[in-house]
Length: 312
Image (cartoon, rainbow, N blue to C red; front, side, top):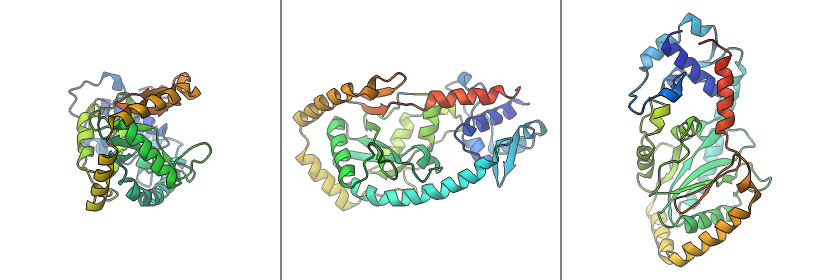
C-alpha cells in the first residue's frame, strides 16, 4: 500500500472501534496517520480530498475495505452502515428534544457555552443513551456555576443519576472561559472535541475553544475551525442574557464559591469512583472532570488490534 492508503486504512480502523463507518469526505476530514504518534506539530495536512477519493479506488485497499451506500468500513463490517443510519435518526430526534431543555438552561448564571459531545455529537446515539455535554462557565465561578447548572437540570427532571440515564444530561465535564484548553490530549479526546458542536453559545466562546485546542491538529492534520453557530445552536436572546446577568449579580459572592468548592471537593474525594484505577478525575478551579471509566485507552487497544490484522 501507498502511505496514503495506509493512512486511510488506519482512519477506517480507528472509527471501526467506534462502530462508525465513514464517507470519503469524513475519511479526509478525520484522517490520521498509520503511525499517528509521529505526526509533528507543524503538519499542515496529509492529503487533499481529491487525493483521498482517488486513493479509495486502490485495489489493495479495496481488499481490506468494504463499501456500501456511500460508507467505507473494514471488510465484513457492512452491518455498521445500518447502525449508523439508525443512530443518525435517533440522534437528531434526541437533539431536538434536548433543545427544549437547553432553552431553559441558558438562563443559568455563569453559563457561557454548552457543547454537545459523545455519541450525540457523532449522531450515532442509541435509544437508551444519555445527553453528553461539555459546559463552559465564567472564570472564577466554576463551583457556583456547576451547582446552579446541576440544580437546574434536576428541577427539569433531566439530571442523570443512578439508573436514570435515557434522555438525561450527563454532567461530567465543566471548564471555564479562562481555561479552555483540554488537558487529556490523546486521539480519543481529539476525536471527541473535533465532533463537538455548541448547542448554546453566549458569544463566540466556541471559536475561542477551538483556537485553544488547536493541538487536535496533531492527531487530525485536516482539523479546521468551524463556525460558532450551526442550525442546532440556540442563540442567546435579550431575555436570557438579562436574566443571567441579574442572577450573576445576586450570586457573585466569593465566599459562596469557596464554600461550595470546599463542600464539593470533600464529596468528590470520598466518592469510591475517584480512587478507581484508571479513572480521570479533576476537581479544581480550572476544571471539574469526572470520568471514572475513560474510553480512550480501551478504544486505542482495539485500534491497535485492528491495525495488526493487516500487514501495512
